[in-house]
Amino acid sequence: MKNHRQLGFSLMELLVAMMIIAVLATIGIKRYNEFSANARYIKAHDTIRTVSDGLDAYFLKHGKYPDLTSFEAMVDPNSPLVKENLIPVGVVPIDPWGSPFEGKAGKATFELKCAGDPGGSPDRPPFTVEPGKISGGAATAAPATPGQGPAK
Image 1 (cartoon, rainbow, N blue to C red):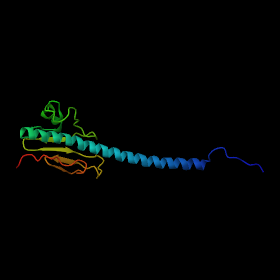
Image 2: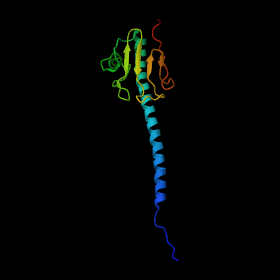
Image 3: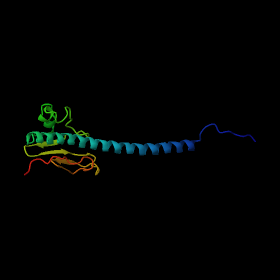
Image 4: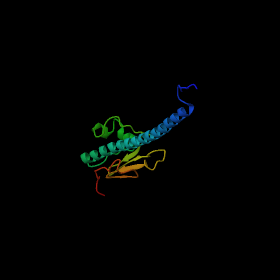
């Protein structure tokens, strides 16, 4: 009787190995997408927080908020917030998902909005920032601004 030596992998062994690789890749891609979506949400919070802090600093310096009708006007290079170095030059008025941030400021208050994750994830909802508070989003991702604005 001749002893036959196997010179490679059987088809079943290759299929099992490919299946294991496919399962691991699927789990990895899903986790990557989740971390990526969370990073975009945190970036949106940070952008809103930067402008909110700039508005609070403006209020502390001038005793009122600037009259700005849109978020885009707040981050424009000719904005008083940019000119007085209260926010950095180049803040993007578009959220990480490609939608514009919303915002307005008047003498007594301001309101900044982000539409959140367009995928509708309950972990990344829309949020609004006003003087001294954040609503609608995860408060742990970006705590409320410390400035309270003027007394009403």
